[in-house]
Image 1: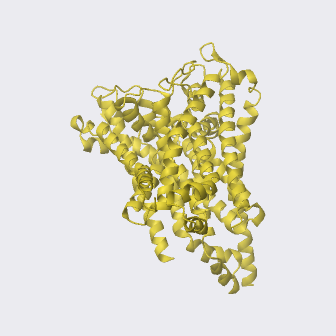
Image 2: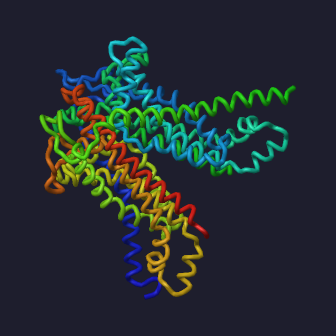
Length: 292
Length: 285
């Protein structure tokens, strides 16, 4: 019964099988999304799906243009980043470089607490507080708009951005800072010219992962985005992001029908986005490691 | 002169940075306190333990609470062994190579897949293809796939923190590799693995989008088997706040449900944070 006894080998194979499960799951997701999504294109053109300006799945004949939904997702994501990037990166720099050491862990834990709040609670909060505020402040007929969705998504993207950016800043070697300070630079000059540039790839990864969080979020946008499948012109209009469209319509779509397939086709698009976002984040951190 | 201007710029910059930090804390504080203040009066023993009445416009949230616990425990039942074993392979057995890189990539990608896509997948695979129907089983499996990366990453980190000398000492005494892992590495890494499991539990309890099409219903009944659909706190809150006709009248129930869900998830997270903190402090090697 040495190192290579039959029991040891068996255990090894079993553990290996568990590790490979992640790949299997990912492949299963791909297979089933495509199996249920691709039949759409036997009845509906791929070009029309991608560039179609109208999403009226129950009209006669139905329209399955993903463009308004895609733009809806894009608008709320850009809006969320406009809020979350300055706040999140600023807070990360504050935690890593400015805050007194005793409160650093506390501040980071509090920021991570934001990640623990369930998305439906964010949605509910936005529904009862943010939406009425937007309606009154801008004097709109309805408060459920791209702006309301952006505001709450911005808060939801914060913990991801803060956590990843703070890790990147903390990973910058102490000697960099010391060298800069020894040359007579102030603390702020050191942050701006040395620490932040050195951590820039990590900070970019943080922003990209934050964007991924915003694109993929479902419940909050379902509750506060207004759900109109129009091509938005301003942040004060209601939008219908891709994720929310799936969640809102899958219940009424007939299993195996065109509408059902169309919703899975949106799922494919979302999956490809998350895949691309991961590849970019991966690529940036690979390059970073080479530089180090 | 230049020095003084540098100091002035620094003062402005640091003020802006602390304002950003303050903004984050204000957002957190507003959300928590708003829900707490409005909902705390609704919470009572009766609210937690009674069934909804009068077409969901009165009464408590007992079945939703039970359903969420069923889903969370079911999720852990599938994802904890799978994730922990996968992490053991990655840390203790795998050699750096193409396959390990692909596994890592798969884990990272799973972590980034939007939750609603997991819901679609769960609907197509568990509910339809495997015929589990809309049930605790389908919902738990879907959520288990969703939280798997959380458990794998936390377990990997926990196992990597076990010093190499521990393994070498055990192997030098003649123990086999598996004996070393079971008797030496796992006991030391266990609290870290449990931290991951607890975080996954919190995540599973709070997710809505993956269970809408795979597990959740809006009807005041308790599940009688793993193949029954269930009520769940997040779904209950969602339906009450948006799809119910009486969404204005039932606001108190919505605040109450939000508090219970928030309290449940944040308590779970807090336990994980405390365990992690204590592991870090206790570590003496």
